[in-house]
Image (cartoon, rainbow, N blue to C red; front, top):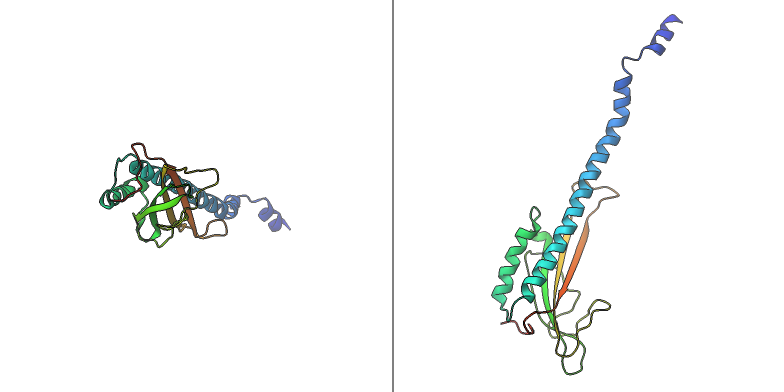
Length: 182
């Protein structure tokens, strides 16, 4: 009986037992917090890529395919420390309206990465699908930058799984129309 009471009152190993229970929970919280921070940073970076790309294109008086390609090379610096590679792509589209018809896609260019993704705006020469509330009237032009990115979390769980992220930015050209890609 005395030996049983001695084991019951002995507290020397209590810290190890408590740590064995707490450590897995603490580890999961640290990993989940890291993954959440990484996800939020990537969201901000993709939004910055969309805004920067549309802004740089819309600042031009006229634009060529080579200039758009140069702008795509700048996206690597904006998205750092992440990289597009095979996981992302930026699509720039020019939309205009004329002759009382609906908005049409004038030209489109993709780059920055090699992900195969189609534009949600439409294809060159076809009708443009614009976000609700955004209008392109006769004689107007809009530049739309879309960013697609396949997100793969470091820790695959029920909370964090692979998904495709999408960001879009819309600008009106400042110095005329950019309805032609030279």
